Length: 341
Image (cartoon, rainbow, N blue to C red; front, side):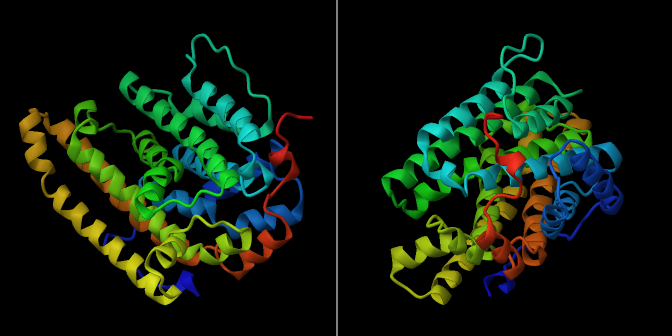
């Protein structure tokens, strides 16, 4: 099955040693807040191994910082699964939800004008308020922009599904780079790791391309390993399926093309990473700023490698996960309740 297909992502395998303890604390929080209310849904949630994914994304995080990372990954999964229902094919309903989320991300914490109106929005707002504590104005602005783009992209995807629009690979990757959540993961790694790469580094074309490559490697990895789950959901926007249509080829041939796409991007990432010393010198960065820049590069490596290791092992993409999807695309009615109606 596609979940077993290997990819060439030759970065160090890393994971926080605090995953098990942080996962137990997070599960207690989910139950106390009413997000997990049944044994069957607790079982389903645990098969996803969300805490393990967070531990791979944030391998240097412990305690509250790692719990914050787990909370963020939990939100991504819950929010994404909402759109496996009718919501993902209803642009107006998707806009109502996503516009509220984008407004929550945009508003000033000193003068909030928007209040969350459904359970999952309250989960995210708690996460966002904790996430931005102690971070610079530049980080807060950048992270808020990434969250806003992430939320509103779901509206675009709903419009495309309603219209029956089939994207080519370039347009698909451009859209998915915003919706995959990698930008938010990288922002969170800075927060959980207690560092920030300088704003001028983030605004450089070199680092912007590095971030794009990381997102695309994650997209391609996820699309390969989640192929059976996407087919079960009736989801046509999957890179393997797109390659089959574009090249009129078999699934095996499409997987071969995807593997080469991953290889090309990883190779490009490594060549760009070799140029970061030159970038640091040209910007006149201090030793501490250079260290933060290199830590951000490592965050990208951990994101690509961590997602790969997790996606090959998680039951979210296995036949176990496909079985859950066929019974219900959403984990919890309280999560799916849109306006507390």
